[in-house]
Length: 332
Image 1 (cartoon, rainbow, N blue to C red):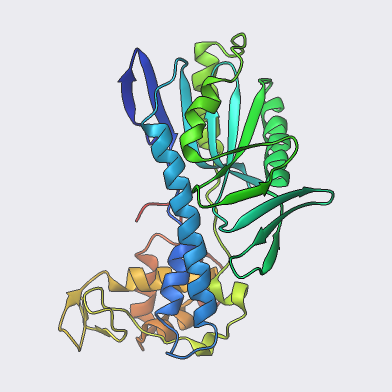
Image 2 (image 1 turned 90 degrees about the vertical axis):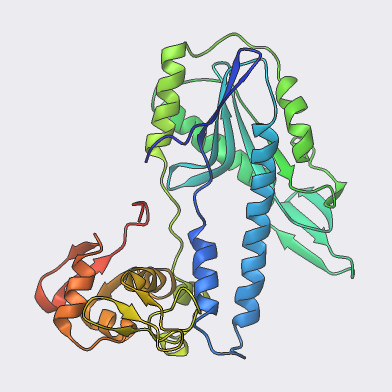
């Protein structure tokens, strides 16, 4: 994974985004699964609602990223979006400077919000008066503090850590704020960062850049569970076949050199790659030759073998017991 950097010279201070947000595999799986379920399937509204929720969350994180991108600060800093130094925790946004670190937990939950401290909980009241309960973002933020502190200590790094819960949009009304945690809207983030006390420098330039590289190298991309497993949908409910990128119909036919859509006559020699990616997001983390043939709609075992071995998939087992998995971290 390489650096994703943006350099803007502002009053001799460099804004550097070391890591942007990963593409959402959860969103990709939700969209793909809806396209393979028949109209009227009882779980289509559930998947559509979950898709809207994920998209809203991404929109909120993009709001924060844009505010940081267009702001200038009087201190050097590196910014990481969607960072998971271990598989145990994920930070929506982390700002690292030579003097301190800041964790931002971004939430997009509409309605009137009440932060409860005993027990920790977030209560949301909708316009119709209905109340919903959520895990408190304060607890998530504190958990990230602890896990990040442990990660830093394991590398002999000790710097002050600050943090805040960021509500993506001003339409989110806070009736009862948490007692000890700062609540911000995106446009308030710059002033919050600028008002952090000017502490003595904890990291020299070499250590600062080394730590940024170490955070990036340690990042573990989030791979969601397949949609079938998450929502308990039988395999048999989904349509099989290769999807046409032009007309979006399922049912492309394999010819010796390519795939052909019988509806719009589009030819696409890589159509199987997108379709098998859908398999790993919707059905299972692994696939066998037989499953590949059934899903793509090809009969020849050798054709399926050539397709699977051409895609740089990870494999284990031999002969008919061989299965393949996809490493989503590899760019395709």
